[in-house]
Amino acid sequence: MQSQTKVTLLAGGVGGSRMALGFSLLEEVELTVIVNVADDDVVYGLYVAADIDTVVYRLAGIEGQAGWGRRDESWTVMEELSRLGVETDFRLGDRDLAINLYRTERMAAGTPLSTITHDVARSLGVETRVLPVSDDPIRTYLEIADGSMLDFQTYFVRRRHQDAVAAVTYRGIELAKPAPGVIEAIDGADIVVLAPSNPILSLRPILGVPSLAAAISAKETLVAISPLVDGTAVKGPTVDLLLAAGYEPTNEGIVSALGVLPSHLVADVQPEGHRPWRTLVTETRIASPDEAARLAREVLVWAR
Image (cartoon, rainbow, N blue to C red; front, side, top):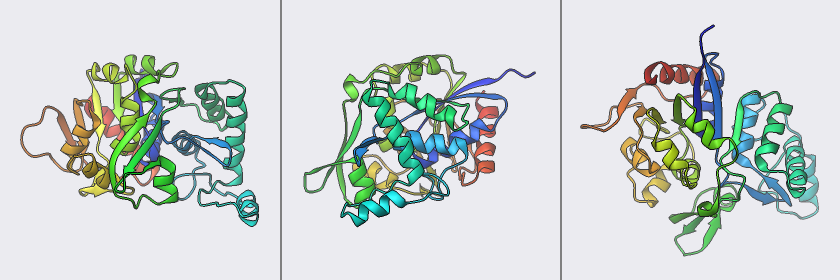
């Protein structure tokens, strides 16, 4: 039997979940996914771990049509809350709410997020190891043009990322410790991959955890997959946030925004001039599981 290649993927959002699924479909890969937690929030009194659930639901094959939430959802609780006059612009389906109720109750009893994530994933039939980057709270806040600060979910969901952003901060990141297994997953990986996730919202809150960037930078094979397709983001505010942070909305700008230097870059265009990384130019659109698996296999064959 062919030995497996150990791949550790850093991911958040829909693009990260798609790439996680792609690698998980390869029999020759032993995959660990390290997930952003800076989007987490308390909604309706419940602890919501948006990126973790997006990754787990995708790996379980039960993701919603929009890429988040659960497939074949019912909305009884949202309808009843709305009838009672509660603002329900942050919509959670009934099955999704059950997961969040379970997570909230166990966290209140002192169980770490990493343990709960493992148990939820296994309950849904997910064998891939999924780790939150930290059990400690990290929260993304965005300063908008008028000087006020918005938490991530207010900016992204409630206000549909329409505000011009002046700055992004990650509260609590300086004190956050890597969750159990995170550093070991990086040190033990044959290849570390940065998913085609938003570099400002999904990857920097992972890479900024103390000791994590050093562990990643020490890897001989560090592959960054650009989230840009045909020069722009498939969805979301990636381009706007790159510009707000002072980076060009190009593949070179993506690399600069990460704060770590990859050994390999996967993109759909060849960067101009000499670059200190190898570039694989290929189709990076991964709207289907087959496309994600194809890209994962290309990365695996090329980088190892």
